Length: 248
Image (tube, rainbow, N blue to C red; front, side, top):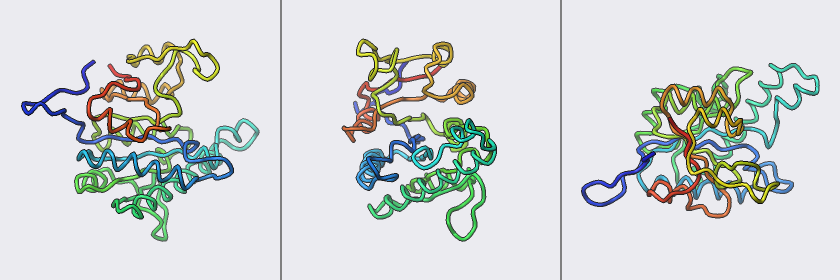
């Protein structure tokens, strides 16, 4: 699967527009629900893409604050739990937006459902694409805006809406493995997978609905590690093989 090609000037052709999926848990550190140092690391990753003239949309989860599915298993109404989880993603998106602006990056936060009081704008794919084309980072929150959908599905939906070239999913490991590399030292990393293989192997990198949407719209996913080396995304954009590519 070829993701990059050299142009006539022997420079690497980069993606024009990407959707970066961040988990809420990735923002937490120790006792900090939203860790300032981790926010700074996220901003560095965003800057590395912007320096290469790549337009960046972001979808962030809310698991560091609240997981609706977990409390639903404990008896909470699923719809109520999911609404609370979506609100948690708004908090994370506002934190990332503020960190971007403090670092001199123009950022706009959008929510999947309306929130008044000037907190953030409702999702509008046309306005989002316009903002991206102007060099702004657009941070999407509140998932799809409806309960019973994961933020993975929300990320794919936003990626399709903004016509992203690829979805980058930042995780704590450097790709997709045959087993949990933390628990199984013999686990090996996949360089690439098809959507059908990812679903068949039940790798749980994203839910089946998200994979199915990507497959239908031919939208590749790159799973990479956001820990340690903040240049990883930049390296991948420059054509360096890293992470795992899931595609058709």
